[in-house]
Every structure is written in structure tokens, then in C-alpha cells.
Image (cartoon, rainbow, N blue to C red):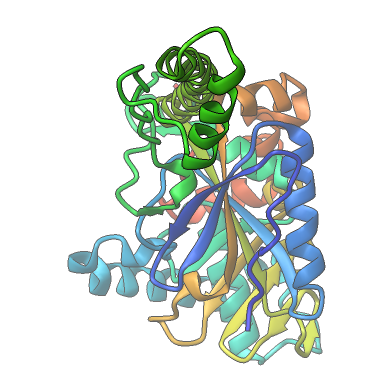
Length: 367
């Protein structure tokens, strides 16, 4: 069974609530240290379970699902297209050689060949039963921070529009609920306990003022103390409620920590798990396919086409758009030009473009 984070102190990370029916914990991180510690903790508690991979998304959906399941009405059509593309590649010796699938140890191993081909098609934008992951959480953050713009065929940097995550698929924790302000104390509602009243009666026998005046003075003193405590408590609650407003009115990205079943027999980066095939694309493919090298790319495919990816997610990390921008900066390794090199640089992409139309990004050299 996958282990979920149970500790409460991750450098100020806030337990937001849970996601999914399992349920899976969601943490909001305030800084890079809480992010790194939470990632490390999930790796530590699942060290014997497999390899923790990451997936960055702009939105929190109900499920992590392969693209072929996004539109069930077109599933049969997409399955037919996938089979057609796979069969075409298997039927072309030169292309199989380019994929590294003509080696004696894998030639004729149809399952292995089809897995590699489907994984490549997935990573380059086709509709398949695979889901993309990476083994670098910086890369995953990038994919949550940049949103795909269908109109311009580009990834665009998100801005904080202050609309916030609607929480449709989040079951909020008590930590994320606003606290009511306590009732303001009044002098009329201030009472002294019986022991204090007995004490004042004894003092009144020797004091130059009446018992009633002593009671009034002590009530006034207690009221002042109670009211000051009330003001301090209200200030603390208002600060907490304001922080909830700030978090909820901020746009976020979501980082999924998926525990891949790599405790299994493997060959060239393909792990034959109990319920999944997990593929490290950099090991499985020649480096002529540059995109997987740039993205630290992996894919996971369920052996059953209805495999539930949610079952192996240990944690969801929520990061504000502004914090992600601050952490990633503007280095060229964290850019679209690096993650999606065009076909003039990526030979594998060029070969695919010549044979199928499912590529997600067009060449920068095309008109």
C-alpha cells in the first residue's frame, strides 16, 4: 500500500484537505523549503514501494487519467488511430531501427515494441492509454505554471488572476475553515466567582469602602482583563481568516506525487509491474529523441485500460502561481525551447512529424 504523509510540520506547509475517494492529502506550501521537505518525506516513506514521479497540472481534476479517457465518446476512434500508428511503425524496419527496436534481444518481442511505441506517441502528443510523468519536481512545476494555449499553439505563462482554486474536488480540512469571532465581553456580563465574593466580604469588614463598591471595582478590573484578552484573540483569528482568504483567492498549480511500481523486473527502462508498465524514456529510447531527455520524461501505462492512477498518488502539493514563478525564475533549462525542442533539433520529433499528425507542438520554422 502507498504511504501518505502523516507528519504535520513541513516547514510551514498547510494541510488543505483531501482529494479523491482514497482520500489523498493536499498540502499548500509557502516556500521552497517546505516543498523540498515534503517531496523528500514522500520519497522517504515510500522508499520500499517504488520510484516517486511527479506530474504538474494547472488544475485539480477528479482523476489523473490517460488522454484516451478524456473523451469516452471518441475512445474507440482514438484506439483505432493508435493501433494504426503503432502497426505502421512496427511494419517499417528503418523506423524500428531508429527506435532501437531492431536489436536481437527485443526483435520479435511485440509487447515491448508496442509499449515503447505507445510511450513515444504519448510523449509527443498523441492520444494513448499512457500518462506523462517526470522525475524532477522543477520540471513538474513548470508544467503547472505554463498553460497550453490551443489558439496560439504555445505554452503561456500563467498570471495570478486572484480567482483561486474553486475546491470542487477538495474536501477541506478544519485548518482551512474560517473561525468565528468570540462574543465581546461587557461589564454587565462580567461576574466574579464565589471564592472572590467571599474574599471581598471579609475585606469589606476592615475596608473604608462598602462591599458593593469592592465588587464593582473588581468587576471593572476583571472586565478590563477579559476585554483585552478578547481583543488579542480577535486579532489572532482575523489574521488567520485573512490568511485563508489570501490562500483561497490565489491561483495555484498542483503537483502530484505518484509512486511508480519499479520494484519489478525491467529491461532498458521498462518496468513490468503488477498493474502497470512504467517506462523511463531516457533509458528506453535513443537520445535522438531529445524531448524526453529535456523533460526527464517517464510514462506509465496501466495493464488494464481502466487502471486507476489515483491509487498510487501519495500526496498533492498545491503551490501558488506567484511562488512557482519566484522559484523557477527564467533559466533556459526551464523554458519551452528546452522542454519542447522543434524538429530541426529533435531528430525523433522530426521522424514522427513525417509520419503522423498527432504532434502537440508545431515547428518554430513553419509558417
